[in-house]
Length: 426
Image 1 (cartoon, rainbow, N blue to C red):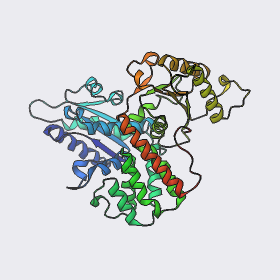
Image 2 (cartoon, rainbow, N blue to C red):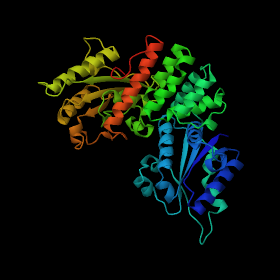
Image 3 (cartoon, helix red, strand yellow):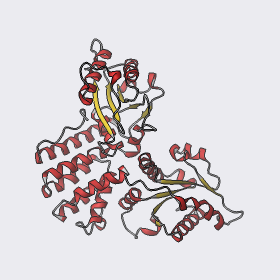
Image 4 (spheres, helix red, strand yellow):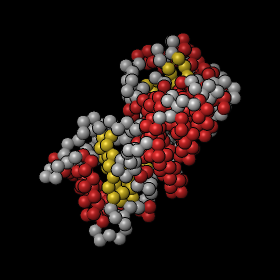
């Protein structure tokens, strides 16, 4: 009936641990395949790759929220990955299970607002030292018997599957073993490196490797053992992986037809905006269009007008708008979000705000991702209502990651000519 992942933090909570096990037993009795680390991981087995694979392939999830889970960074990461998948695939069923006195406000205060917005289930312990009654467990799991039809067009799973498919084209198993070591996978996690499972674990680990240098080293190990064109495609697929998925998913608007959607990304390098979009949209070019516009260096006579001119030029070039057609006559691309990465580091926030307002008056369906000047990040100014993203990396780490990504591109370019440029041109 499908795979159900159980997210929990119960090592120090005996009653929550017992509840977790009884939920798993009940789901198993209802013929679900339960994915639970405490039961399914062998002693000494590397758990991160297995959990990433489970988070990618699960059909539904129960997030058991006791007090320890609210403080767990790993539970929060699991929630971020699940909600990232769910932002594309509403058929993914996620059940927040509030334990005893935990409230939805507690969940929000723990930084899991998206989870608190879902329909929650609640269980309370019986009086004394008793756990949860069996009838209560049966009632709260009744919703699993009527799961919505599964949407197989899950971009996160499809992205991982595409990476896995490219890795299966590596013709020397030893290169896969070396790639696993570069990704810090222990040897017992890839003891059969030529098998499909090993390629799946490598793909899952690649997708959740935020150290760009490790990723560069991993793809470098397989370069000489696969077709140059396939290698170029693999590099293109993994380029934005160094951006954290939990951060990148906030780029996405609430709906497909959001109007005047604006994101302020407090990054330094203009290419980071393109990488954020690639990460957020799972490198699925059918779902988004990315373009870049920026003004000249700080101190230009009229950076606001220069930025407007750059915006119009890139919009006309990217969307193939005829010279005589006004921008307010341009229609959105069906079933596709259009993002403009606006490098406003040479402008004041007020000037950037006026440019974004001008764009949205002409094209309200256009999504704009703004990179402000570092000195102007503290005060939101005209972007008080925009989505604000502070990346989980500093300027030095950002530069190192951009450089490592560029090295991957050069590896691919040396393997095959015609690799399309990445970064400012989307």
